[in-house]
Every structure is written in C-alpha cells, then in structure tokens.
Image (cartoon, one colour):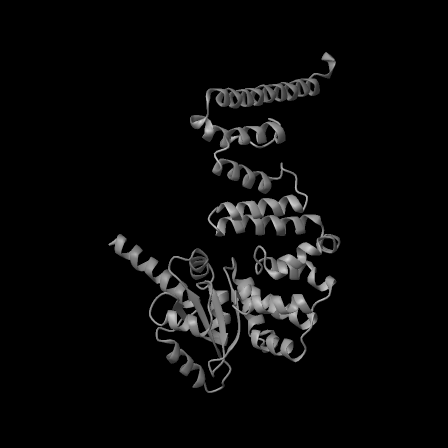
Amino acid sequence: MKKWFLLLFLTGICWSSSGQGVQFEKGSFAEALEKVRKQADGRKLLFVDVFTSSCGPCVQVNTKIFPTKEAGDFFNEHFVNLKINLLEGEGPEFGKKYKVKAVPTFLVIDADGNEINRFVGGVKDAGTFILLTKKAMVPENSLRELKAAYERNKCFETGLPYLQMLFRHVQPEEKDVITEMFWAGSDEERYNPEFFRMLSRNTTFGDAIFQEILLNKATANRLLGDDKVENYFTSRAYMHVVEKQYDSTALAESIALLGAIGLSPRHDTYSLLRIIQLKQQGDIDGVIDYFEKWFSPQMKTYGFELSDLYGQASDEQKARIRRYFEKAIETSRNTTQMYENLLQRSINPENE
C-alpha cells in the first residue's frame, strides 16, 4: 500500500512538473500553423524545435529547459509550440523547406508560415534560451530583413550582420556572400577579425581568395596579427592533405606553402606533414635525420614516428633510433634532477 501511495505521489509530481513546462502540440506542422492562424487575438507565433534523438544538446534543452516553469510561462503565452524530428516523419521535408542544416535549430514562424528568425545550438539555462527567443521574435533581426538591407545597399556595414546570421545558421548562401564581400571590400574590411573568422571556413587551399591572401600576406599580418594569418594557412594546408587522403601531390603542395610562408621545420603542422611525406617515400634515414636535426629531446615531440619505424629499420638505423631515445631519457633525468635540486634549495636555503 505504501509503495502504491509513493508511486502515485511521484506520478503526481511528474504531472505537476510537466504541466509547468512548455506545452508542445501533438499534431503536424500544418495543424500547428492552422492553430496560430485561428487565434482570436493573433498574438501568438509558432515556435518549432527541430531535433534528432541522438543529438546531445537537443536532449539537454528538452530535459533541462523546456520542463521549467520559467520556460513554460514564456513559451505557452507567446507561442504555439511544436517539435519536429529532422530524420523522421515530416522532418526531412520540413528541413529542406526551411534549410535546416544543424540540430538543434529553433525557429520562430509567423501565421503565414514565413520564418521570422531562428537560432542554432544548445543553451544551458532557461533565462538565456528565453533571451535568444525574444531576439528571434523581432522581425528586424531576421535573416530575411538582414538580407533585404544588404541587397539594398551592398557594403560591409550591412553585409557583416547578414553574414553573421548566415554563419550562425549554417546557411548555404554564406560562401557566396563571403566571396562577394571579400572582393568588394577594402583591406581593412577583408582583414577585419570577425569577417576573417567566417572567411576561414569558406575558403579552400589554392582558391582565388586563398591566393589573394597569400599575395597580400604582409597586409594581412599587419591588420590581423601573425598568429591568425599563420593559423589560416596551416589549417588550409592540413585540410588540403586530409581532403586529398594524404595524396603525395597534396603533401608536396602543402609543405611547399608552409615553407614559403616562413614556418620553421619545428612547427607542429610543418613537421607532421614532412614526416608523413618521408614515411610515404620509405625514407627511414630521412625521418631519423629530421628528428636529430630539428627536435632536441627535451621538446614535446616524443618520437612515435621513430618507434613505429623501428621494425622496418636496418641495424644501423635501429642503433640511431635507440641513441635518440637514450639521449632523450638522459636529458629527462638531468632535467628532473635539476628541479629536485631547486626544490631542495627552496625548502632548505641553509644548505647553500
């Protein structure tokens, strides 16, 4: 009897909690939209949560935000709410129509089925989620309005907000707008840090924009800083090799680029690609030479590549590999001893 009472008590809590949270429609998108149209006062919009069952951030929002009273009070007052699984039922067609490229995506839609705005990705608390939704309810913040402003006056001032929205929403127009803005912009606009961050995702090794940045590297360095420009070229070079499945030509092209922009052979990406190239060529002596010339044993380059090659090496090459690791071990011992001595000197200064 006590067990049944406890079960009923807990069930009552669950019902009470779910009643406080966001109430979602059970029907289709068309039915939810019709419900928005039939409102007597016309105040509510349609809120759509596009999710998949395997999406971690989707589960986070569904279990930590939607059940809260704070979320329920806001969304039930301002919206007809609907969930759509992107991979099931009407989800694929809905995703195609509204160009949903990532989950979770949250859309605010008017009574005519027009998207007012959206935001993408998980949010950890109800307050932030509500704030993002309030911004999405303002038509002036919508992708449609930002696009219209850019089309009326194509300049950096109108283009950057539009591009930021495309970037956040992972929209296919992003690359076209990046390209248009890059070629129309001044150096200060091209190498604006926020614009360049988005540009980096939309260029590939050797394309026209890539070549232009390479030709004007000094200007890019001056306006962005050496580190950002170096990261741009190293990431493009590495992705070029990966996309070409470690093809020997792609390796040679990427290594030549990294050398041309002045990277040291000790640089992480440069050394990774060069060692892969030497291994592809079967040049075991070349790999050993590379380690002996460019990496001192105290550097954080542990020599896995040398270890991997040991079984294929000649006796002379094995001896060189062993000497490299023995030197590394001895250097490590000396370094450890130095720090132990410094520790003792700190603890017992009277022993000096």
